[in-house]
Structure formats: C-alpha cells, structure tokens
Amino acid sequence: MTPKQFYDWQTKGGTNDVMRLIDCLERADISWCAIRGLAVNHWAEEPMVTRDVDFVVAAESVEEAIKLLEEAGFNAKRFAWSVNFSGQSKVSIQLSTEAFYHDFPSRSVPSRHSWHTHARGFPGRHPAGKNQGMARCGSQAK
Image (cartoon, rainbow, N blue to C red; front, side, top):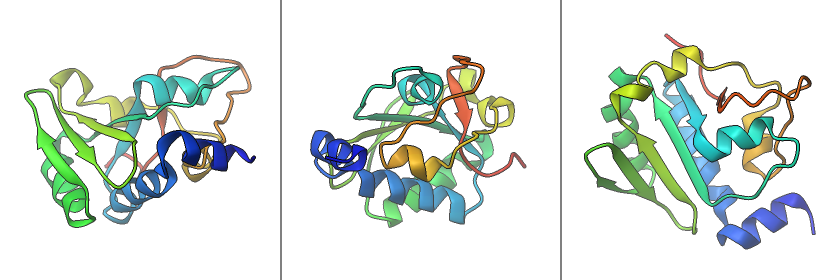
C-alpha cells in the first residue's frame, strides 16, 4: 500500500478534497498556510496521518476563499472563530478566522516540498528538524 492509498483509506478519499481545496486557493492567488497538526506534520521526524486540515488565509481574502470553496462543492458551516467545510471524504477542513491568525500567511515559511506531495500523504521534513507549527504552502503573500 502506498502512502497515498493509506491516506485515502484513512480519510475515505481525502486526497481529492485536499487537492480541490488547494486548487481553489492557488488559482485565485490567495495567500494561505496550514496550521496546527498538518503544519507540525510538515516538520515532524515521524509524521502522523490526520483527517484534520486546518488552514488560514490572509484576512482580506476570507470571504473570497469561502465563496470559492462553496462553488467548488464544499459545504460551509460558519462559527464564531472558524468556517468548517465538508466535501466528499472524511477530511475535516477548517478555515480559522480568529484575529490571532490574521498575519500567519505573511509570516509562514516556505515549504521545501510541494504541497501536492503533502496532500497525497507524503509529509516532508525540514533538514534541520525544526518544528515550526506552520508552513508556507500557498501563494506568496500579497
């Protein structure tokens, strides 16, 4: 079983939802970054499979990101501090909207590996073994 097959087995086809999410943000050139567990996994020595995809976008792009994801077939449910999206898989996608995260996309660090590789279940590793908690995974900050 390949890592991608394992991830899809664990998430009931999560690769497609993650790739649709990334495609929406990248095509619109929206600055974004992964946060929490997925971002930590990027730097981890021994990454773990997670069904949670937590991300933030530049504060001025929140409404545009929500609109694009809904147009791509995701169902959005708004909460005070986040917007949760569901697609066709068991992946839990959360856009955090707390003020604490507003500048994360501009402060995040470049990923040395393609995000598409991460989404397919092949987490990358930082050569210095750093655990940053976030990784630049999207468009350059505007």
